[in-house]
Image (cartoon, rainbow, N blue to C red; front, side, top):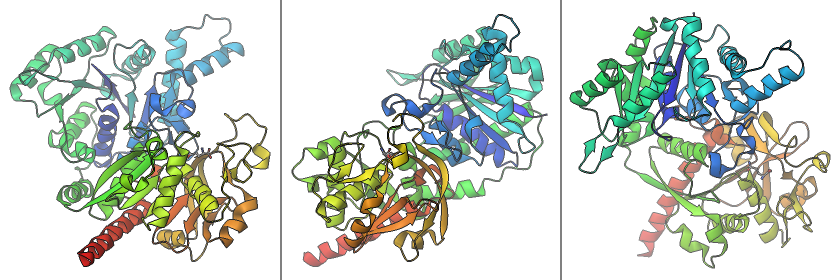
Length: 544
Ligand code: GLN
């Protein structure tokens, strides 16, 4: 019998439910169990594809092209659980399906209701995502906070799991907050209230993961246990980590969380093998070197919008034994500045991330020009690659008004544009290149050397392409095309001739980088940044 672990959250959002769920997944995998990670998002959007980064942070894309919540990125970085369309469940999908069935007459005249029709659809989807011999345990993260109206049908479905499968096969982990009030005292009341809220809907949590500034003392644990009915050994301190979020599985393991889960679910497993993960943390803790990487984007003030990129840069740092100092530059501020150099003092590498829409574009172009002219390593991702092409067209090829038709539909020089077959189609849906596809690397290019392979499979999420009409002109002016799609020769990568390190890619390498397996492009980018810093240092000391 498969086991199901539901991870809920209380008190407030942003406590790290995704990290808690994925750390549990990580620990169970390290004990030899096969797991599936499932995210439930209680919003009415069918998927995250159309949501603004202001609302939602990054849209994470899976191999099969599903546009999902950024927590799936956390799952991908901490576990080996395969992720696809099935692993991301939203209220929108559930209602869409139930209403479709109702219209088809499949409920045979019955009144269609939240219980049982919506809850049955939720359970069906969780079972579907957990299907197959390669799953022992499914970990289901229920988005939102207990007490929200939106999550009630999902919690009711979760409650029914106990009824349907028996208590031994279902576990509830509840993440809550133990805040510190003036005077430094830790308070348990919000936790008591949020556990009560869960109990009201028939769920008694088995394990509490308590976010707190520091490790919870025995006395505090006893008090929480008394009020919540959760055993003392099942109250876990998720205190603030000093070095890296990747430390969380180890912090949980130190408090026996994996053994407690296995015991409660009556599961046999091998002993925990945390060698790989522990040595990762050792490396993170022991690095003293720092590399300064600038990111120039338009959502720089939000932490979550470029989540996978920030993480991948850190992975590149781990591989090179360097810490990363991220310098976040608002593209719009750069746009209005006469002196871009002021923004890039002590910067060892510049990265332009993906994005949509015109805002901040000219700031990104300035950043790319500055990197090219000052021989600073430059990494363009998706929109970032398109910016590299526009900048090159304007400043090297001499097409001063070159642009993407996304930003200037009437431009004289549409160096980035929609493919002919996409034109005239609805611009919001159906025209996006999404998910994993193949690219062929051009022999002898820098990107070919970095991957040391002929073919790569990477994930995409974009609509516009380098226009075929300009490829040769750009090549003649010194822009190297490093990769193409196999069938229609769309440009997948560019690099500058006569520059120490420059790569622009039309795809999103950040979605497949993990701390254990950092992506080769990020490893090489950070290495180039370190070399750049070293050269700067030695030329400065020669000058003085
Ligand atoms: N806006 C660009 C396009 O649609 C780039 C998209 C992206 O960076 N993900 O092609």
